[in-house]
Amino acid sequence: MNKYSIFFANFIYQSVKCNRSCSAVYSLRFYRTNVKIKWEEGNSNNGNKWTTLEHKGPLFPPEYEPLPNNVSFFYNGNPVKLTLPAEEVATFYAKMLDHEYTTKSSFQENFFTDWREEMSVEEREQIKKLSKCDFTHINKYFLDKSEEKKAMTKEQKQVLKEENNKLTEEYGFCELDGHREKIGNFRVEPPGLFRGRGEHPKMGKLKKRIQPEEITINCSKGSNIPVAPKGHRWRKVQHDNTVTWLASWVENVQGNFKYVMLNPSSKLKGEKDWQKYEVARKLKLKVETIRRLYREDWKNREMKTRQRGVALYFIDKLALRAGNEKEESETADTVGCCSLRVEHITLHQEKGGQEFMVEFDFLGKDSIRYYNEVPVEGRVFKNLKLFMENKEPEDDLFDRINTTYLNKHLNQSMPGLTAKVFRTFNASTTLQEQLNKLTTADMSLEEKLLSYNRANRAVAILCNHQRAAPKTFEKSMQNLQDKIAQKQQQLDVARKELKDAKKEHKRGGTERTRKLVEKKEAVVKRLEEQLKKLQLQMTDREENKVIALGTSKLNYLDPRISVAWCRKFNVPIEKIYNKTQRDKFAWAIDMTEEDFQF
Image (cartoon, rainbow, N blue to C red; front, side, top):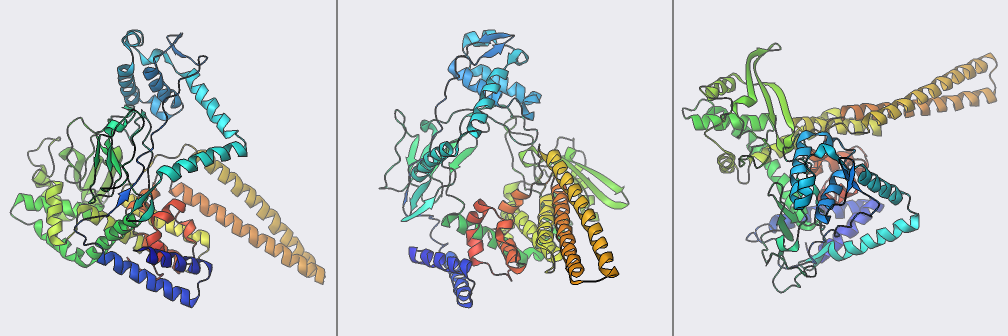
């Protein structure tokens, strides 16, 4: 899109926001159609993402500020003055004393091992057991600092906000093909302790401070190259316009690449999102053929083909991730479909009154446990027994195939099709079906939001998007129960007053008693609505206790489904997407009509 189409888009969008007149809606439809056409036409540019790119580079965290002399670390009851490298790492642990992580043995062991590497020889000789370390004074120091920050005046907070805004203005934007685009994560992550999700075996390890010498800068030739911090230089400066990242480095804990990327609201990100969901929508036209073919694979003479057919069945039916091979001891023992081992499934000829039951139990992405018991088709069950014959528990279930082979096969069935597209397709299809099933026009706003969250929850369960119950869950639920009880009492009193008012009006009706009855009826109706709203909130929170709705909403659900649903049922988009999410999905908000169906 050139600057004129962007200007026109903003003009139309603001017009529609202010006043949805017929002409504005017509203009917006014209714009939506043209955006789609422009994106479709602009995607065959030999893989090039941009022509010119200029930015300031990433913003580094401040250097470590030593503890005051009156704040001490204690070992075996005695104060110990640590060297700065050891003291900095000690503060990472001290800040987390109140967190559940520091109670876990693997976290403690990993931290202590990495911490000792940062100590001097003398410190290693003296500090040999974590159990004898006392971080409470350091912990209290940082808690006090946190309280001081909370107690800052409005003016002091404004000063900090303005300083932060200046940094964002300098580092948070780039020039991309002549347009000012917002950058997403322009700050280099500060050093700290790795947490991971679930029971990650590397939790507690030290995330080291990233230096400029580790960072690769990506910008266009002839642009102003970002200046490295004083006394430092960049690892490398490159000019690769086939990628969209601005800077990259490798973090030390898992050896993963980290990138400074454009903000999700940027044009390039929006186009990429739109393309992803369009590929998933195209799968609708091919999915029945693909399903018929993988069912035929179950009877193939070649074992490799049979395994491919069963793996695709699981990816389709259960929305399993494909899985990737990993080096031993490098990451957590997490698996996907292709890397399942014999020990991860148990076959039951019959269980709970159902035939051909398969019990799955393994660690998925981010060390989140996947446990599921599902009935499968008879031939799938028979094939699984065959795949498990003469194998040890630690042997691969699908020993003839891998993710690369599977995705190559899928791409032959439909260009651009991968196992991940299946996951996006099934997630979006589930949301669309559930919204169509659960929502009616006569519902209140609260009932519609509950329906939406229930539809989203069905997707989260399908994709195994779990979370630990929030620390404040019990307290917030108790507060909600107290509000409900209080509201119920108010309603009981109001109903009694209404009953008394009706009796008085019946004995000798006057204008005064008639108005009193109407007033009491209005109070009862209002309190009933308020009570119902609180009860719906409680139901929603309880159902979402251990389900993470955000992951699927941001990564697997076509946002046009949600936008169309909002428009069709008069639900404010702000109730579904927060400000950051609305920026990310601005393309969907701009181009989607209420009759859109995935």
